[in-house]
Length: 201
Image (cartoon, rainbow, N blue to C red):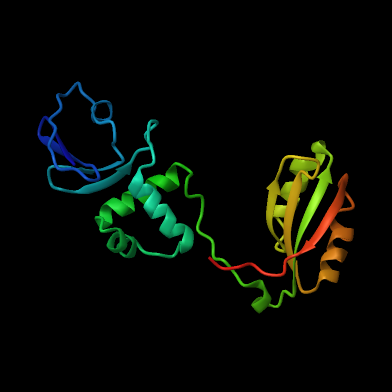
């Protein structure tokens, strides 16, 4: 939808995803107050010089196209705008705007490669279930996230409040890591489960 607005000698054109109509605003009106589903706009001056802006809309809701885009990115986050647009039969610029807004809204946090650690020389992958003193939890989580061997930390309900996903060359190396690095925290490793297989989607 293209929203055109004139201010004195300068003409501003607000380009909104999936637009087909023109809406004319008076000087006192704001397009943000008049269009509920604004996702993004481009600002052009009278010489058609372009400055690109995007808005985070408080009442933004995920629709069917957003879910379809997210499903494709969840399977393969390296897919391009054009690839996604072609598969969903959507406009490439609409797809781009949707993805950028999903990022700004925190729905897409990051794009990360899924690695096969066994082919990288890591012979052991383990899930550790921990009981930890609540006063030490945040410090421990920060410490775990800063270590390259730790690939994930999950906070859960129940007595075993934390699950740590860790990799190393051997399981003996992981046990040694636990003895060396966990000793400064008030915690107990309740379970040490070795990952046998991670079935691919």
